[in-house]
Amino acid sequence: MEGVLSAISGAVGLVGSEAVLILAACGLFLGAPFKVPGVRWRLAALAALGLAWYLLPAGTEAATSYAGAFKSDAGSTFFRSISVMVGLFMLLVSWGRFDERIQAEQLASVLLIIAGLGLTAAANDLIVLFLALELVSIPTYVLLYLPEKGNKADAPRRAEAAMKYFMLSVFSAAMFLYGASFLYGSVGSTNLEVIRAALREGADRSGTAVLLVALITLVAGLSFRLTAAPFHFYAPDVYEGAPPLTVTLLSVAAKLAGVAALDQLVLNGVLLSGLSAPPYVTKAAGLFWVLAVASMLVGNVLGLWQNNLRRLLAYSGIAHAGYMVIGLGAGGAADAAITGPSALFFYVPIYTLMTFGLFAAITLLDSPERRVETVDDLAGLGKSHPVVAFLMAVFLFSLIGLPPTAGFFAKLNIFMAAWDSEQSLYRVLALVMAVLAAVGAWYYLRIIAVMYLRDAVKPLTVRLPLLGLLVLWICALSLLWFFLRPSALWRESVDASRQGPPPAVGRQR
Picture 1 (cartoon, rainbow, N blue to C red):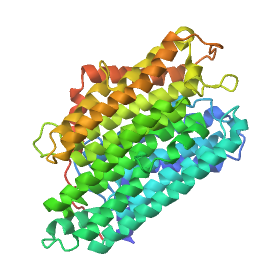
Picture 2 (cartoon, rainbow, N blue to C red; picture 1 turned 30 degrees about the vertical axis):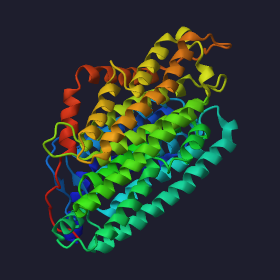
Picture 3 (tube, rainbow, N blue to C red; picture 1 turned 180 degrees about the vertical axis):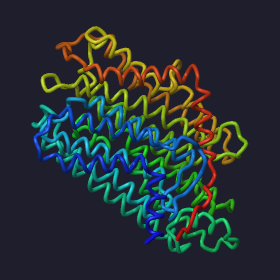
Picture 4 (tube, rainbow, N blue to C red; picture 1 turned 135 degrees about the vertical axis):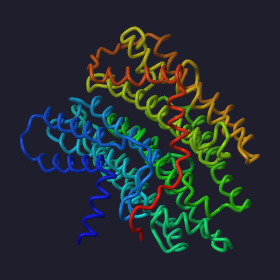
């Protein structure tokens, strides 16, 4: 009994932030049937997120829990901080926009998604990692189906979006479990540290073919969350049919979960440590090369034909998934100035800021009286809402990768990591990235042109809430600041990407 209590206390000590969010979500679910003013639920969720932020590990010293289920290091803290930030942004943008009758359930689902993101980054076991990913997926099904205030007429589209996401998410989970079974069968343990040590000690590499199958199936399962082609089919339909607030969260949360899980399994050495022989390293890099080219091609080319805003941004997300995959495969020497992992870690918070900000702006402009669904609906925004148009232009310029926004350095780092990669094919990939990014710039510039160069037939008259505007300003100013002073974020990204395996504390199975 004493050992069990020690294991529980050790685990809670490392993931106290996520434990607070889960407990708060349970409280919201239990209190939902009672008639409580909606502002109290919002304040409770805000308090939970604030406490979760406070409980995040302050240092970067690596450690694992007693039973080895969770770990804390610079990389996990990096992702967990971004996750809580997304939760705070989501709460402020959704303030007063959720349906009062089901607000508690919706807020609880948001808290569970944020907790799942944090646990994905902190997981040190295949089973815990799978459960954390499902803790992200299951509340998302709920949010996709539940209506927002004043939008009950969209029930058929919401149901279709929820069903498509559910079906493909189940397929993704099955692929992940199939790959995890190969990994478990190779070593006989689900603990990632045990797997990593066993693979590094294996001299004969007799099971490398099995590990290669594990790599392919695990990456395939997680590519669904990245919306990387050819696992992107759900994204345009789900983004178009789901409630706007849910899409705002889904646009960044799914990618955060995918990158955090791939960091655990690929960048952090679990799989690639067992694929260190040159032929297999080349095959692994080739897998990411194909995913990157397919995603950039599908996202940037098909995005040109889209007029629906959310479908267009779904294809934008597919293209950016391709840029992230380049960071996964580019690799690089430990003493290199720009490596694939460090470029990817720098890219993730920048992508989160610009994508969440853009989706949030579109969501805040949307109302039951005047829907904002197509690019043409933004016509004249530069005159009717000049501040919002300026902020959206900052986000769009950052998505293109133009100065003076941080998106410029984010894409440049990915390009340089590919150009300097030890894999010769990645120099070609860097050129492909440059060409396709230029192609994709067209649909971002088209949105800016519509906002400033066209007059609206029916101008938008919605009054944006102050809390929502605050989030937009924070995202936009952060993008401008990280362009002027990128060094601090870059150091954090490098430290997080180079974090070695944590020392074992206590027993591991």
